Length: 412
Image (cartoon, rainbow, N blue to C red; front, side, top):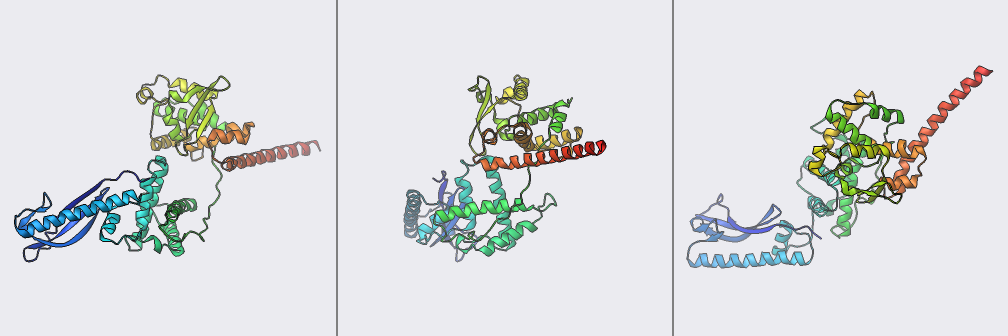
């Protein structure tokens, strides 16, 4: 169902194109701030037009006829809008104009599709995911500008268009930094475009799927996580600066719960309850997937909740922890990594990976349990961490073999 739209209609004249003291009359349809002008094929003497009322102000026969015609146009445009609402069709300024003019052939453009998708999904997608779609929208617009076109009809989407878009993304250098997109970032933008085009195909806006022959090429990257000694270095480090101490505690809390940044920030007392074992559990819904997660509180995590129970900032927001932006948090984590002599690119999401590997899987927690704790929809997602643990086991056994060989050589 389409989100509520703001629809207005007004009449105006183009005073910049006056001829013989007469100007052309237009109807302007505006939907959600975007407008479409309709030429009414009528003219009026400029001095006889009331721009505030959008009507001819004179009592002449010509003025009365024009105003009567404007009333008819108004009724027809409102009728066109009502028809689209009843049909549950996509409502925009151009679709109302097309219905009014009898040109309603349902020929939708790429940018219309993107706008429609982002409007429709504004309530069902998380803020972070929706923000990624807006970023993809930005690159689509940049690509069209690069091709020196404003938009393209969905019927004109081809395999060649997708290949060219991929090439554009790979070669594009953002203005805010000099680093080009990595392969997987390019594929994510292609993936989002594909989801939007699939939506158009399901709604029968297009007859064929241009992605049918397109094969995405992802490069598998292992998840970065902290070893037990690295995590202990952070836990044991005490900071006199309050902001660093808070960020350290938030990071460690995530390492022992597996919760993402936004899920930690949203926690409140209602999320803490007693579980089936009589101990304290966190029960919440992941903002990204809306999947419910139930996490028994480990001692370290429970102590951190108690630490901030009476914190003035946490009380103000009615959350378990004082709120801090993700950008600042990750910036401060870089300072913590330097002070703890950790060479890895420390981000808050590494805490979630650390929970999956170092805290749970490495300590014998079954992968099915870890999958539930992380709120994964598919166990295949969790198996990525299992492979990391297997590699760690392989490295540890390799070191053990080397030590045993040294001992054996000494005996011989």
